[in-house]
Amino acid sequence: MGEAKRPTIAVFTKNRSNPAYAAARLGAERSARRLGARTMHYVPQKPDDVDEQIALIDAALAQRPDAMVLVPVHPTAINEAIRKINAADVPIIGFINPFSAGGALAYVGSEDYPLAFRIATYLCGHLKARGNIVIVEGPAESVTSLERVRGFRDALRNFPQVRLAESICGDYLRDATLRAGGALLKSGLQFDAILAANDVMALGMLEVLDAAARASVVVGVNAIPDAITAIKAGKLLATVDFDAMKMGCLAAEAAIRHLRGEVLPKEIILPVQIVDRTNCGQWDKPFEERECPRWEDVVK
Image (cartoon, rainbow, N blue to C red; front, side, top):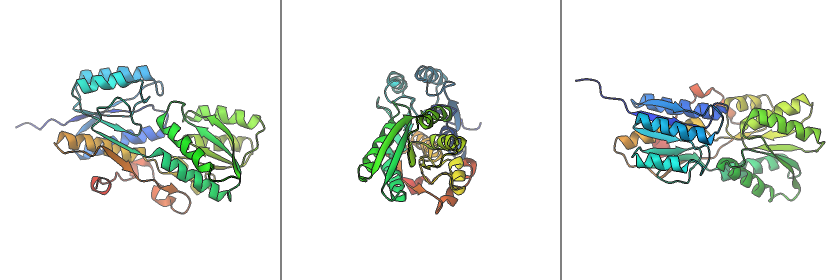
């Protein structure tokens, strides 16, 4: 008898510019390899491009994968493409960012509002509950950014002597953050701290500050390896664990478990963890050396 066909999992992420999505792809590959499946990756060449992701979904459907795991580039604009996936009877797992079309067997993610609320509260505690803060937002239509900024703003309302001095957009990208941060510094605005909605933007703001010989307290979101390095060096105060690699691991495993006939929970939500110099050692390793979570530890 020949070798049994390995199931194919089509993995859709938003771009190649954000290291969190590289980590998500790595996580999906690791789970698939461990469980006897294989992955095919579909990534827009232009970051977060709606039309390109729709075309990639069509291309994947033509290949008839056994299942798909998908991060939508937009919460609603690819709904028609998701309906095509459903009509083709291809199982789909959502992860990192939810989509509104329905049809996902399960969603793997973290709760953006609570993690943002907690890291903002942590920052205000560090500032002794007074000071001027700048928020660096992600893309205007990103669900994760919208929820994180809402969490930031709600947390700041609990500290009457902490003022939101400005909110700028870094689009979750380094280059966009360098431009927006550079313009912020040229404006002459005085501020004490920066709340960045992801680590790429937090690190971008550190670059801007270093170039201008300016000091500010900075926090981010994601716990990517470069952020951990910056925490160890005393440049970044803290980040919060929004671990795309773990989500990729669990999303691919969920797809494979479904193909094996298992019933999945509708949501798999990872816990919120603040990462600073007191505990960053457990994150102080490249994504390749970080462990995928055990299904049994997350899905109770």
